[in-house]
Image (cartoon, rainbow, N blue to C red; front, top):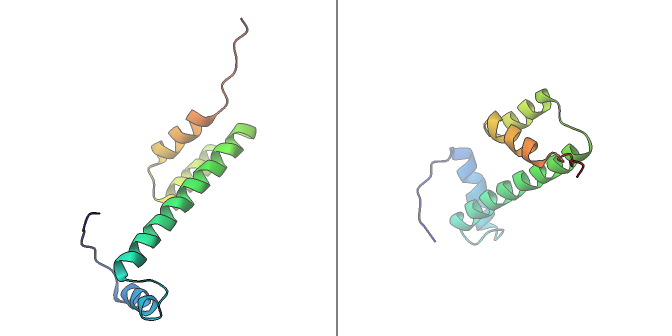
Length: 93
């Protein structure tokens, strides 16, 4: 495990500390780690869902741009992920 330092708005700190005080998380570090894990998992699930949709119905460029903005990812990364998951046509032998 690696130790890092982060800065949070006061309102977020209050939320985290209240959850710890109520026993919903064992520590601030555990709460933050859980939140990071949840966000990472949600992104992975969304990308997997988009990849599945891409196989059946190609994604328009404006949707790729919207997804990239929503995920906070570079457009090129989302577009590349979509392109890499498109079904490839098979060549006749």
